[in-house]
Amino acid sequence: MSEPPTAGWKVDESRGHDHAGVHVGFGSGEVVARFEVRRQRALDADGSPVGDDVDEPREVLQALYRGMVRARTLDARAVALQRTGRLGTYASCLGQEAVGVGAASAMEPDDVLVPSFREHAAQLWRGVTPLEFLLYWGGDERGSDFAVPRGDFPICLPIASHAPHAVGVGLAMRLRGEPRVAVCVLGDGATSKGDFAEAVNAAGAMSAHVLFLVVDNGWAISLPRARQTAAGTLAQKAIAAGIPGVQVDGNDVIAVRRVVLQALEGIRQGQGPALVEALTYRLADHTTADDARRYRDDAQVRAAWGREPVHRLRAFLAARGWWSDADEAAVLSACRDEVDGAAQEYLDTPAQPPEAMFDHLVARPSASLTAQREAVGGEGNDA
Ligand SMILES: Cc1ncc(C[n+]2csc(CCOP(=O)(O)OP(=O)(O)O)c2C)c(N)n1
Ligand SMILES: [Mg+2]
Image (cartoon, rainbow, N blue to C red; front, side, top):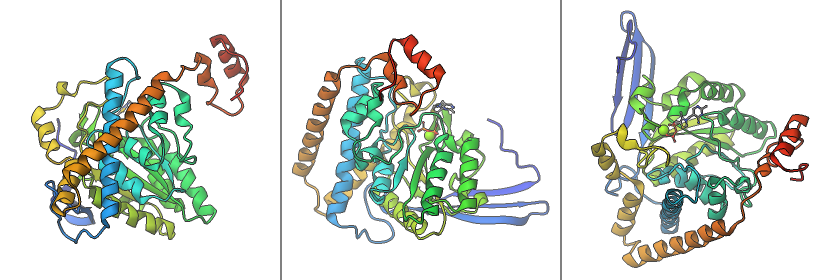
């Protein structure tokens, strides 16, 4: 890999434990831009509290834990269903559960989640059912017709193309004077897309009610974070748009929840959009169509397992006397039962005819779409 282009520029980066600061100067070394991106964390990798006391109520912390275990259980089942030919290509969220649960637990029901394709933990927390989830990944459009978070967007597969949409949603909220927020979740790779740069800029210029939650999981398929950008942090991409950007330990569900709560509060009060970069790690392959062993070291993955979010919160809860082996067994069994039921219901759901793919595409199909639908075998659009 070649060095980043720093000729004529002096770039001093640090990605320390508590903060990541980036100082940029040029010419004689005069500093023309100086900013600091704070990194926040509540628990160490072993579950020990760091910094401020953890004063979230026991019930809240236990619910966060259950939410992460539930997402992990469904995730494992989805991989198993794919491996046995009963689900489509699937993107696992293994290791990223704290980002989804932390963020979703900070949102209000009438906020709008605008997700990309790995936000299963957030979607489940907000009320997407395991059945809907499996239908979607099984190729059934009805899986995006959520019964509960009706205002949430469906999964977005094209990288970053949902970011401008989120700005539109957040602008509408601001214009209507609503204290609601659109939470746009996207990956480290997505921050290299023009759509992202345009969205962050437009959000700042129009003071849209948007939170950009960047899930920095270290990888964009096989491209490591270090080669994604010369920028020291992804949070600093907020600076040029004139909006605040912070980093949070994305394997620390308490810290994610706190940071997102604080960001949402500011946005609701009209302080403008914000960006949060959550540092986590994609423990699984990119998707079930990938084999990450071809491009990353086992040692790196093993080290990342030492920082994963579920064990961390469990260790903290257990140390407080708030989690027993019996609690663990009960949660695992409840999650397994729920996922068993959803998987069976999914497998029992008759597949839709091929022409169904047209039914949820547009409200009023064009002549061309109608012709294509008929060519596939169906008549009319009665969706
Ligand atoms: C516009 C577009 N270009 C390329 C792809 C192929 N693609 C799928 S995932 C991915 C990498 C995304 O990386 P990141 O944003 O970090 O998200 P992650 O997969 O790590 O969750 C790419 C390039 C795509 N889906 N959309
Ligand atoms: Mg990524």
